[in-house]
Figure: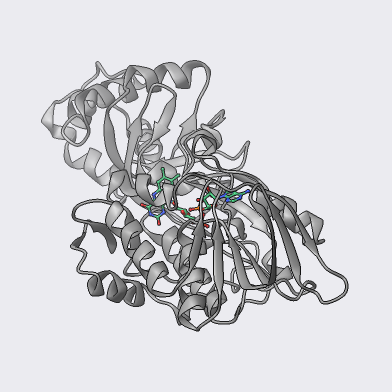
Length: 395
Ligand code: FDA
């Protein structure tokens, strides 16, 4: 009998295993892939944005927003940074509190592996789980795998969400949740580029590779999402870049996407100030934006006229468009490129302190499988560490 079986050797599962192992529990991690931490390895462009200094509950989407508070408060970015520093891993802040490895994501995986070894955690890779059963007699779990069956008192599901399929992401957590009667919040791809069709796609394709700053939101006037002020990038399929990835997690068809190209406001004042310059609209806009974008954006507004020739109402209209450029995405690139899965195990069915299923003692869900989704910028790993830590303290 093993005290704790953790299914999934990613960020959350490994953290949980380490903490439980340090408490003297016998722990086995079962990982389907041939190696642990595959997603950590490719994260942050190979340098793993392992946390965000400012991570707090307001940086997460969930249909039950208070749920993440307890775990995030009890294992903070500083706690993870202390672990990274104990292992002598060099890191830096890139921007907005985002911490990256100086060298490679491999440093983080090696750190977790060493911690597992020190905590006597047994890791089994390349093992497929065939079935999970809860025994009526004693409430223990039987985990049937391609390498035999294991009995455990506590079962932790840490198998992540649906992105990325090419890395072997599975719906395992959701099917276990269904098997044990937990509710699921519908899932969708998050932190993912937008796709467009028709003329909007032609527009994006023509500008592919060009980026600019904006503040972006999704939704109708009365129901707009959180606003993100960052870069957006034209691609051959639509729009990407940090601002787009951030709002994509809030987007659901057919909501409009709204870009304010003057995040600091006052587009109308700026046009007025430059009215006497004699410049055409496209030339004037190219003072603030990449030239090809300025031309393409202003073409439908008769760019050949000098700005001073626009009537006051026309300038009002241009300023309004600059501050509220509305686009209608056809969709997103989906799980193939999404960094996260929005939705998942309904947190109302879990205890927030322990991640244990309310109706199934001994069964825990952690990490991305749970309906807690972080913003872009190290927040998702922080949730994986924090939820794994909370669970590891009690299993
Ligand atoms: P994770 O998906 O990491 O681990 C689940 C593990 O379970 C995997 O190892 C999988 O193989 C295994 N598994 C699945 N099904 C199984 C089964 N049936 N049996 C056994 N094992 C099974 N976040 C961030 O904060 N900073 C960043 O820089 C990035 N960068 C980034 C880049 C890219 C390309 C992606 C796709 C994602 C990111 N993320 C990120 C998001 C982050 O990687 C993600 O939120 C965490 O890895 C989630 O950790 P989990 O442990 O919950 O799942």
